[in-house]
Image (tube, rainbow, N blue to C red; front, side, top):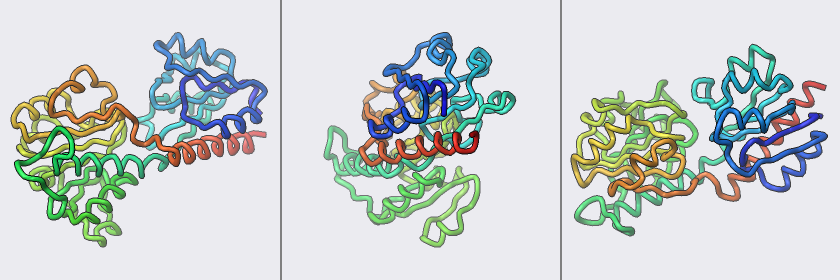
Length: 300
């Protein structure tokens, strides 16, 4: 077991699994706020040999080198690749520190959020209405950028409501194309589709001024990534170009750009994490705990 396991920030694990984690270490420490500096992260880790972190706090090389007892870092959030991780995984590999993450835990809630906000906007069920008359999703051309788990769920849902679904991804998805999803290169997708839904890894910026010019006006951009999938100044310029241009996101999509975007009238921002329902918490908690158990089993 671990000598000391520290959750350096809120990690979203339910009480049942916190009690399970406590049985896997001699000392368990959990902080209920987000550390505001690398120095604070180092202080919280201290002499711990196990660390739990969500997606909010960075654990860079300087922190890792200042905490020599660490042998395991459990990311209680999505880990898709080293480039988008908030933990310096190459540094951990150099020092023999295991890093684990999880996937596919909040996707259904994120999809429900996206569909519900689109329906509200198309029909005018809230303060905004996209077009002069109420509009169904039926027949609307929708483009999915990033056809991973959430992207596939969103594409399935849009197709269920009768939308025409197109997608762009780094690799073609023949099994998804059999459903009727049509692959397009990004410039063609942006030009053709009326609703663009981005489902990208953290820190993946695909939409710059050129891409917004390709999109044109009278369109909706929905983002489910952690942080922007676009250049912020380019998005602001695009929003100013037409009152029928809208950006939809939840708290994850606003990460890092609250000051610049949150108060703009065509930014439909929901200050909650859409992937945080009770089922999401259960899936996250189970996967985080299983990762810890697996590490300990392999390092007896």
